[in-house]
Length: 454
Image: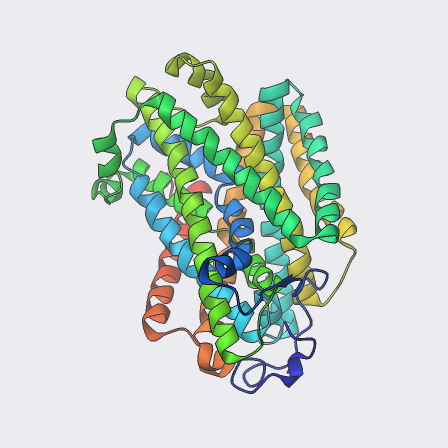
């Protein structure tokens, strides 16, 4: 991005429609640090833009998704694959809007909220977003601790404490080169994907049944238990802090500050996030496929990660199966914690214009997650951490509408977006998706808290 955003021409979103003419730099230490040479060919330019989408994608395959995918596959076979597919398509649309907002206006979603809403409203939105980040961090802490326990027999309490060490890796990588952080994330995603390719090979799923599961079935709406798990999958898929994160990460690229330059950046950033989220789709589908092939086929219902790890090797007849499962879980948990650091920094700076040192910000967020996780792990063990994992997803569901609605509203406003306003068909689909997400997440919240008397 340009050093002087106030010089941008009117109509690009920097002027008109916002209270402040010139936003501060989002994620300032990494802002515009990845150059995009104008003379690169298509594939090399796509590679230069690739990275932010993968940092966002890890939120769609974090440990919070594992329990719902395991339960869905073990209880109903491949039927809920269609729900994973549809929820991923929703995520692709929302993340493309994040890229559009960040590139066109030079604002991340938190900054856009601060430039639109009153201070009291912004404070409420910030508190809700911080709660969501801490809840997501809680799920990642628990997932990593469980993986360390499964792989190395480290007690859950000590595993929870050990997860705090990732703060030093994040600080080191962001100071050295932002592409290094992206590289670590991509390597971990490839590791997770490789583990599930092997798992699917070991499980030998029935391909015709698998393909049939990609087609939505009326049974999902007719069966209350199936609908409940389907809502859980949708509720755990779109992470609210990812919307703030992506609108900032796209600004790490140094593209031309002209209308053609921004239009090209939006196109390549959308390609990046779409490809990355398709990778997340494969991994989430892989969890469900393995559960369906290994557990459902044997008439078992498995909705706890530890139980799945225990049963995989005996059922598949491959000793390595359970180990690969735990390795993928550890990589998933640690990958998600890396991006949680950046999300926390972005929302604090965006909503409050309060800038703390990254290590201090990370320690505060991680402490909020570690303390309850360590207490529950020490008092209640595996059953307690499993319930805490569910609670984290409920908190995420509660916050989601407060991130989705502003995003869709801002990108649909021509005064704020200028020539980069979303096309009419995108606006219509985005509002429909928003309505679906809100209704389904409220249903999930209601059922989880027992408001329906279920």
